[in-house]
Image (cartoon, rainbow, N blue to C red; front, side):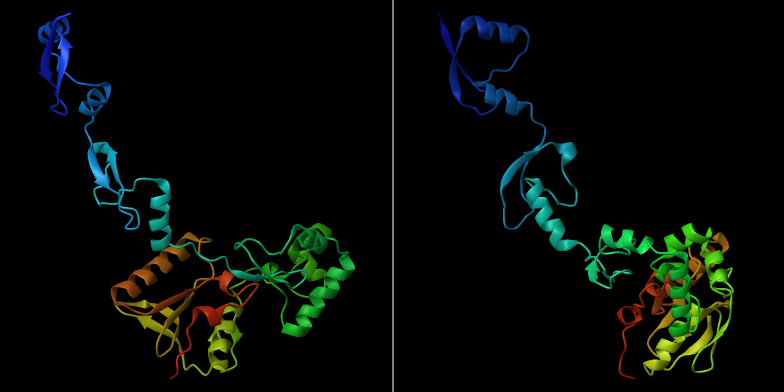
Length: 286
């Protein structure tokens, strides 16, 4: 067998190849490769990159269409996870109080009980006991409870047919719309809802001077609920419940962004079942 010395089209290394194979390649305009590895590399249309993880710096190959234009190219998922976790740390689960046993636990926003056992126990209660607890709540707080803060809400629905019927059975008048009734705060301010009264009273108790219903710039029809020396505070009580309300809320947020107003948005979940105002509104020394 007659061998001819030729040059590899990929690595440039000389190697021997049978004459008949060389003639065949010439006939079909094929290139010559010294090994299967060189043949495979010749078909690669990507680039050799350096891992974007500074602790790694490993070199790796990646096809052109898979290269990240912002330079965030990693050699492995573990390297990508290290960087992503450092730049975007996971939010800590909120600290909550079990509505049945009072135990402190970490959980999602929707979870109200520390365990399934507590959740089940909260529902094993008679109609008489539910009425007693509603009356106790009213005696201690001067108002009827909201369903989110009453640990036996589901049981009340099952025993009486609805939450409002349970309130009526306890001898009280239910609020048809939570944020419709007006209240007077401790400092004399008139509030459009009990939730606003909670915020107003909290500001008063913390000696934070505040005014009510200040007009937004460029739109005198829109007013903010509270203004302190450092913050504009809005309570969005009906967000995602009424389309018109959502539209107004977005307008207020855009105005706050445009005029760089230090707006703090407060939602029902920030007040019920646990008041989190001390976490949301940073108290500064006036």
